[in-house]
Length: 336
Image (cartoon, rainbow, N blue to C red; front, side, top):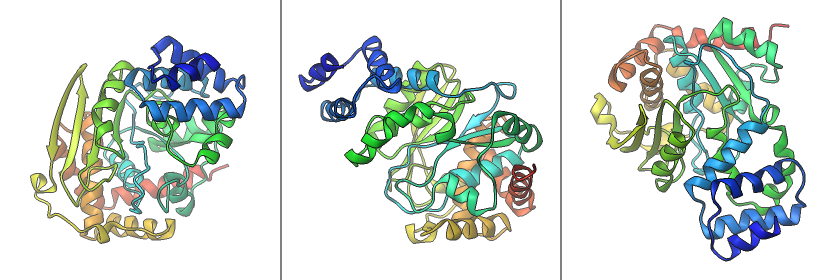
């Protein structure tokens, strides 16, 4: 590890093999906390490359408690977080809408870090049980078509890194790895990032990891979602080709909203806003959910375009199917 730290401090990038070896040492408990801290800070100072993220993701996936599920068509809607913007749980809400439309979701997530309510917080507030073993997860997936993979239960090797991450108190490479390390091996994803400079990087990493269809998104307003408040930069990986473009709510016949309309200061507030949208209330929250679930339905091959997915999403919220899917998940997750 000392040689890797020395290289980073000399502003040298690590190749795939070197980075895999370094992360493997860290995630098997072979490195003292002082050296883990020096390594992570050295990476930050030098700047993290696509190869370094790819290599770290490969090791983290290998160390995760992964398992096969479904027929390979499942998707994830996990983003980086880290925006510092306190919005409602859009990616979680949009997952239930997409699932109501027939998409299969293996959502990877955690409790809040940068927001007031993470995916886990939202689901717990809704009354769901998220602490499941593999057999229970498989049963829920078969019944509902949606499961939540609570990150700490599936990435136990992270225990060697967590004390250092908490001490450093700044973003590290591990903030970038969660979206690339779905334990169920989802090959399709709507992936939000907190920095526009990560859009191209993440689509290239997804390509390196042999993903099938990925939309990497970043709102001009800073959101790691498809935003209702601004245009959104999209990098689409499909059939090993990457195309970058911008979309606007106006492209889908929707009005731009103000940030205040999508703020949630607690899990309770977030759930309340989502429940209203699922009950058919026309709002900026409902519009933003439709944009993101429309993208999820598109990458799931349920619809041919994002626009068709958006239209379908409004139907699923207004006819009660999305609310029914969330209620089904809560019920089945608590079944003993």
